[in-house]
Image 1 (cartoon, rainbow, N blue to C red):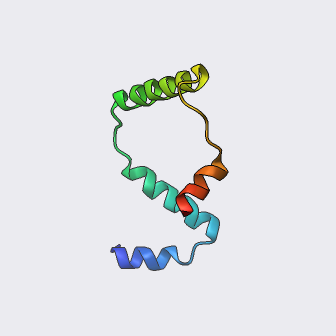
Image 2 (tube, one colour):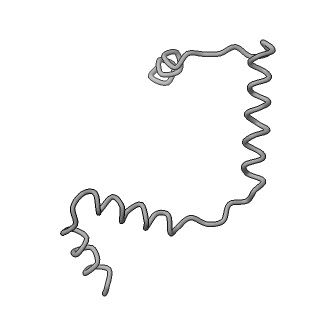
Length: 71
């Protein structure tokens, strides 16, 4: 089956089956993740949390962030 035929066949699926197919296709593209990435995110989040708790930085509301982006 070529890609054009596959796409045409997919159009005959219901929405749930198309969503499942899309999920499976996207999942098949995932590559092995470097374990250091998870550790780096954990370290960064712990540092940011510590800064927040200690008062080194001040929290900003989501409303404030959205307003700043709009301006």
